[in-house]
Length: 325
Image (cartoon, rainbow, N blue to C red; front, side):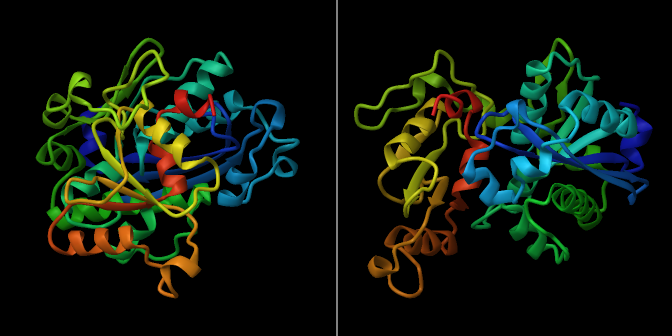
């Protein structure tokens, strides 16, 4: 990507929605083009996923169903149009690990060769920029930055919000995108026909090793390889409430297969607390389980615990282990 485009704060923000837990099941795409710090174009597409198959959980999240994509175009045609609009701009996404994974797996499934792109993640930048927040979900970051109008899980709205988040971060720090990434210790990711490099903080990645990752109880990995660049690698994950898409045991397995460390309790060493459906008969009218109360108290005391929901957990999890559920 030409350096001049980075210096002018020009990029393309994207957001995918998926029909099932499989990353090759893209069903919608939002695209926002930013040039010289201003939104100049925005587009959205529905995509027909493989066999037009949907999981009810996914539909409950984004509202897209088989009826909506029955006559939609294929991934290859949609991404071809999007790539032509984006040209060689930097790609930006909030939780790019998910969106780039959808792009990679969808391209592979449809035997489509994607043009080479560089990309970055506003989720990870925000997490490094404001390390003491309790959540880095897009709605929370938008609230912090006073970005209005977000319709979460509408792909165009999410893409537009991610674009505004990146612009706001650059404006607050009075820097360009390249300097923002460098200052926070990140290198842009790269995706091409024969190469994939994650958006990463080299110092953090070097601090983890697969051998140092302990197991919980007798649960062992059920995948051949664990991605050391995955968002859950080396992270301690606790759960509270009832999950809709899987059992607690399955969630622990997903965490293990993603290189994470599931925990039965919340402590200052916890990285994520995944909040499922709440039984108010057990927790009271405030909806706060003991784990959530503990997480909030620890966060207020300086612990870096992020409270996320089930959908966020699925987006962070390794796609290979989700596909086997």
